[in-house]
Image (cartoon, rainbow, N blue to C red; front, side, top):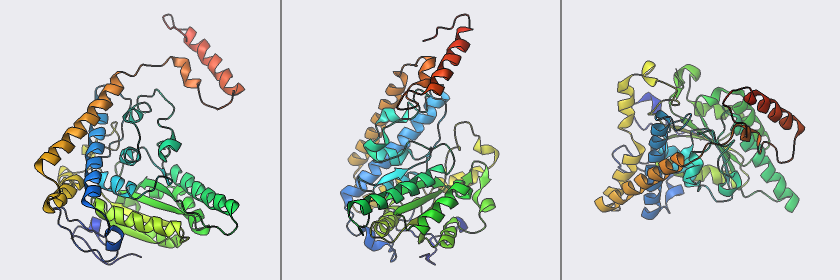
Length: 379
């Protein structure tokens, strides 16, 4: 299902489908147009607002880490089009399995602002309850979430069969990962199982050009999307900074998954504007000119320009969206600064649902260790 259409002279985007140009102009996309024919201006405005809020969350996370309030943050600036575009295609009963960078997916699915803080402040083992919003807790082990997504999808199949012999699953799961993770064995094993069992799962690869300091061309001599063909998985390569085409490609893949067509694969070509994490210095391995070129393809300004061209976003509405983003960031900062620090031994709480002798033994060993410090109060 690869298309020969080329959106730009930039080889990074060769063969990628696009609906919105960087200046917001809407171009026809015969392969995917029908999947967004019913999208209303109101839906586009909601996507725009979610993208703005995601960026403000992201920038606030970086600022809080730099000020010593968070232990780490994984920036997602520049990738809002992929995350919000695909997340808006999901149904409430779908389930997304994410990495540490999909802040926008979690936000669009209903995560509370405080949930973006606790795990990065190291106050909790995880953050939100996954079953409240249909999103897994952020996975730190690179690519492992793809196996979880496929396992969940196979569970959907089995639940349907238990309910009625011969029944077909109507839900889907989604695995989000980056270009670097696409070289992990877990990802390839997940694709083998997904294809073999026709599991209702969609793989979304956010190709942001850099796996920490390794350029994507070094680990993949051909576009990543072509790897899907080796497993017999239908695939699309899209402009990841175009939220409308991301929405369309995701709707198409989800429909296939829900109707017994098996897994799908989307390579969304985008760019990580910030560092890999706040412990990284990207100026050591990539030129400023490259970053500037991708800034001019900003997914937020692209959708805003499109809305303005339709007369669906006024200056007053844009100001309201910006103010909304500021309120989200302020709420995030307040939640972080008001969060108390737990007692050291609390790290052993809630590791298992039931009492576990191994954890209790480790708790006592750590208690003894802490008691050796002269001013250390053990709680």
